[in-house]
Length: 581
Image (cartoon, rainbow, N blue to C red; front, side, top):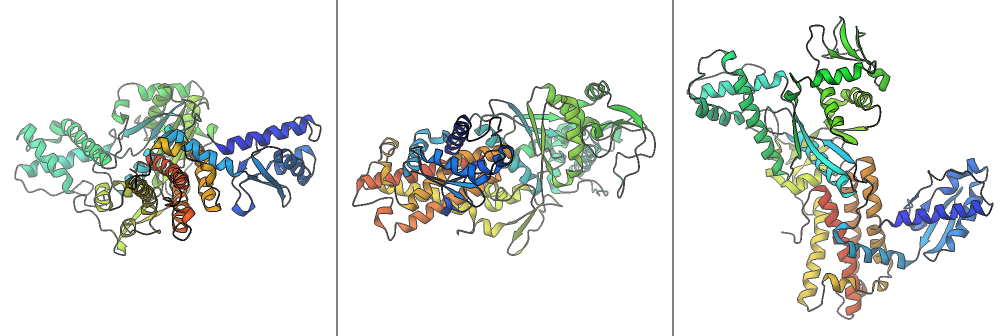
């Protein structure tokens, strides 16, 4: 149930009626007509740009269109007034019963309030985290993990069939480095003193792997040349690191639907098949790339290579897929991987990358566009860096990890729920300073506390009512006389509740789950404001000792807020608090 959609339908129907009456010309396109909350709540409940976007094609003055539309809208029983503002904006005011009705529908729908069929069951693949399997996840991975998981839940909420996917980067040289590092720990487990050359991984998290290798192989590979143990150690170490990564993800209650191994693309013909597909479209050729300006990328050589004509699909330059020596570039297996996604029948693809992958966006979009003939959209979201602060200073590195702050460090410091919510209080492409002390502070300045406190306050109020013998069951609240909710403060909360279905769809269309966190903070603020007004105005108290009818209405309003907060937190992967400790 989306009230804004209902009023948008009313506006469009009214415009159609104006066309039928000859007031507006035929052939107008209403696609850009919007209905949204006004920037200033004092101007009304909703605003439409209809007159502004139709003035030019209709060859009419915006105010003339707005005036005619206002008369039509005012005839609807839900509308108390429609006022023309400025050059032709139209502000609409609605009957209190409209907002009261929304509360009733929220209570009736419960956790399904705000859900929609926007996605229409379309299959979407969301790839996130995808860290190299060379160690535990760090704080940068944490942001991508939280963002990707919340986005997946958001898309699921509006009717998409979502697959959460992790791409295991186990095909490159970094996994050989991991194997060599584990071999050193294996020797150490046998009592040898070892030194870690530059480029290896000296941190403590590989010590258990070395011990496990000793337990499995004994001294079989002690003193043996690399060719004797590299392949086996590589497989063993990769599996051990993926187990560690799965444990890290579980700390944030993240569970992937599918893990895809980069290594599975090599020697199976999948890379060759993907490039053959592009070649069949005339997009693969032999050539020499122009030297790039500034720093030279890894895939540039001043000699003939096999190139993908990515400029035909929006890229700035064509891209190498095979080097002059016949080896694949980093881009080639990525093309094959996305070709595999397309062949699995996904209707849309979303990749969550770290900020350092910004240069990869255009080439990857070009590849997917070419492989799918433009039929499968790819959206790439970049997550900017996170800086951690504690006691006013940047948080020190993890001794266990050696060179970075781990996901486990963050969760141990503030908990999974706080970590998830806080990382979603900024848009993904903005840098984020995560103050661990602020995250645990119990104040309005801490958004996760403020939202959780609102829900806990509601739950506490419902328990208090029950303790006083007031029936506060779902049935009793559903039967409440919501017409008693007529105070401006009560209707303000109801209006905010009514925004939820619209907000969810906007967030899903733009792949921006942070909008949910922002909205929840605003909703909590309205709830807290109403609660404090009740301290001086008995009629606004959630438990009104002089009127059971008023109490039921107030509790119904509070419960509707809790329904939305719980749904929103669910999307963000945060458990709603029923009490604060």
